[in-house]
Image (tube, rainbow, N blue to C red; front, top):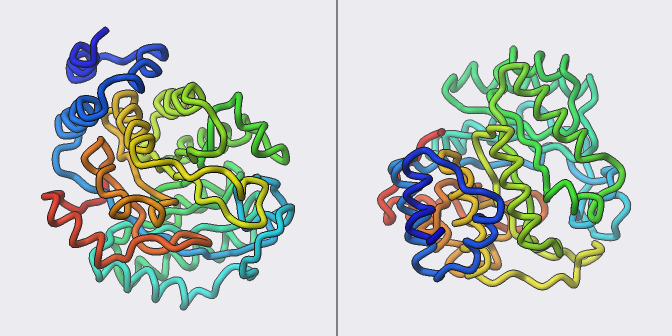
Length: 321
C-alpha cells in the first residue's frame, strides 16, 4: 500500500502490518514525517508529555547490558552510590514540578530494587505527595515482584518504566544476565497491579530495521502508554563504544514508523539528544510528542529552560499524558 493509504488506514482505526511498517522506512522522507505528524495530531492533538529523571541509585549493576555505563561488567567510569536519601529526592522532585515538569521518575541501577529500597521509595513518594499531590511519580526499578508493584502503587507510584531495549531476537546480543521474557513479565505484573507502563528501547545498538519494528509491535501488543526512543550515545568503556552515532534522518524515520504502529502513545525522545541536531527538535515534527528533559543517567541532555522554550515555540501544551 502507498504511504497515503497506510496513513488513512491508521487514521480510520486500522493497523499497519509488520511488512508495511518495514516498507515505510523506504518512503519519501518528508512525506513520511508529514504523515506521522498527521497521525500524531489526530490522536494526541497538541499534548506534549514532559518528564525528568533522577539517578536515584547508581553504578555496580550486576547485569551485563553492553550499552550501559553502570554495568559492573563494563569499564566505564561512573559515580557509585546506594539509594539517595529522601530529602534529596523530594527536594529535586518538588523543584522540577514547580518549574513546570509534571512527571518525575526515580531510576535505579540494578536487576531489581530490594525490599528495603522499595519501602524507602514508598516513603519518598508519600513525602513528595504530602507537599505536591499532583506530581506524577514514576519508577524504573528493574524486575520488581508483583507484591512490590502493589506496594508501590498503594504508595502513589503511578507509572513503571522498563525498557524492552530491542526486539526479542536481538536482545540476547546485548544482554544475557536476564531475559526478554522476564522484562515482559515485569511489565505485565505492573499492569496487573494497576500501574501505567513506560517502555521503549535504544536504537543504534547494531540492530536492523526489522528489530526496531518488532520492538514497536511488541510495545503495541503490551498497550504501553509511553514509548521512550533512546539513541545510543556510545560510552567509552562499554562494548559498544565504537558504534556509529545515528544521523538525524534515520532517527526521524524511526520515530515516524513508531507513530504509525503506536498512533495513540506518547512517543518520548530520551537518551542521545546531546548528539542530535537542535537537541532533536525535528523529531517533534516527525511524530514524537514527549521528552525527558534535563540530564540523563550518565550523559548530558537538554536543559529544562531550552525544552520549555522549544515546546512553547512549537505550539504544544505540556501535560502528563
